[in-house]
Image (cartoon, rainbow, N blue to C red; front, side, top):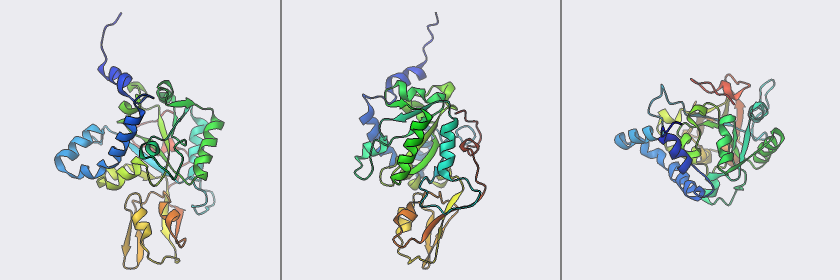
Length: 287
């Protein structure tokens, strides 16, 4: 019998999120949402990058993709796959699915605008730990698709993200790190990810990307500036009286949701792929 002690496994088993420490982690997520601005400081920024496993671009592959799942906000395009269909395809082809009992961001922020019961979906064999820890339930394909449609009907923003540091948050096994993907349904008021990336430096912001959709301003614009305030990654600027959308745009649709004169459309741009796995760079997802 081997007596070898694995500190990594012991720490995750004891301290990763479970039903008993959920509230503490929910508070930590809200603190993390505010930490993006501290990455700009030389010493503390380097420390935070190391803790969040984003200090080695050649070895750390944390990245995420925005999928605007609200069909009413995107401009119809012929022969272009819609973001919600990319998400649905990933779920249909996944080997395992788990739906979180609650959204940890909305629960931690005590959200009053969107239900906390619309939590993330984890897919892939590596995701089984969230069910084992009592914070999610296994779901079949139909249940997961229904969950996506419910989130879309509420106007939530879709994200497909792979965050390496979450190995310790959720308790993923080291050998299964490439076998999970987190599908989040984010509200504009509470999402820790969107708030974090908005304040983070550009090298970290670049890890959150669009799947090929972008905001564009039409002639209805009255230069009110609301789109600048709500943009999740500061991708809109006001050049004279006309807002300008930069290449950083995620196509999340927040600007379109809040525009009072319907001056913002979300349109397809660039090479749009059919499979979410094809978007992730430098490592191979098995979900």
